[in-house]
Image 1 (cartoon, rainbow, N blue to C red):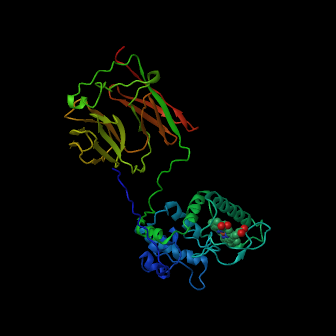
Image 2: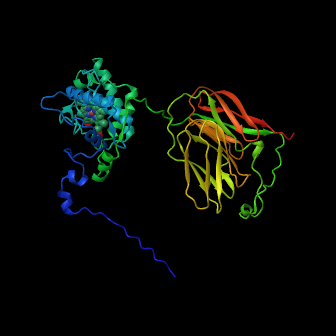
Image 3: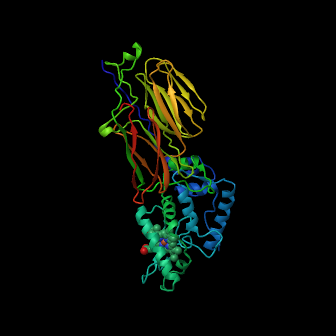
Length: 436
Ligand code: HEC
């Protein structure tokens, strides 16, 4: 018999009547006067930022009024940013306005005044050129790279103007003060001026998150992060692998009784399952924790993976994929110990570690051969060696570090390293086999 799958697509179609309704009712957001629909407008709406100049108000006074509002909100951590408007864009907006506390600096707002981001006038903004109308900066077709070019051009012209080298150039260019560090922020801000549809606009408002402007910027990894890599080798003859003494229930899942995985050696003596991490020298910072949980799976009566790094504060999921019961018992010193029993088909369980610690050993009381280890780390600079003993740690900034390599049979080893200016550093570990 054939099974017919009927998929009903629910389509929401805006009727003609909807189109005539005010945007306010369509988005179900009240007190919305503006017709503009960008992330920036959502930001303006949520934080009640003054939208336009009052009669006769100068751009710098308008900017001052906004600065006052922002300072007040920043101090009380009341600001909210819609998704797609990030910290960079926020500071870019401030740079766009001018400079807090110095009314002589009126960067962009003197000509590109909100809400339309044009003053409707013409200005000479090129050396020897004619006056040109100020374009609106909303929905710009320019790419981020082109926007950056425009900003840098304006910076250069402003310098020329200040030195008296361009008398015809618009006077406003003499009042622009932007440093290299501001450019990326300004470009991020300009990107928030792209319109979205009503549905998305509503989401931008509803999903806005509290933003603490007083917190230092989170650490950003460079585009080509430095890499610390190497090989962990086992010198000498590796021990023979023994057949696991599995119970018949577990053994049923295998054709041949599996071998132990205590010491796995690959190409050229490379030692697998070594946890390598920066033990000392890492700058104490708030490194963002992956949203993706770490996973420990119980598969065919083995813990998978056998060893892994988990971040402090990261979700750690424990799963039983087997058709019989397992439990996961942790032996930790600095974190609360746990013993999680999971009958077949039971739901995933979740733990979060509060403190850096490692190795924490994990075992199963029903199946004594099951073993796993985790390192709880408060930074992202760690790796586990692959089948051939290779590891790679990305993003470790230049500096002096102590790296530790830990293996379940051979214990730990530490090496000091100064990461290379080229961004590529090599570091190899060697453990000695006990079977000489
Ligand atoms: C003196 C008034 C004035 C000031 C101040 C000014 N601009 Fe402009 N801007 C213009 C004019 C006029 C043009 C159009 C130039 C042209 O058509 O060649 C322009 C063009 C641009 C464009 C290109 C838009 C497009 O889509 O083609 C961007 C982006 C821009 N300005 C951003 C800024 C930023 C950012 C600042 C502050 C650093 C700033 N402007 C300061 C007058 C000004």
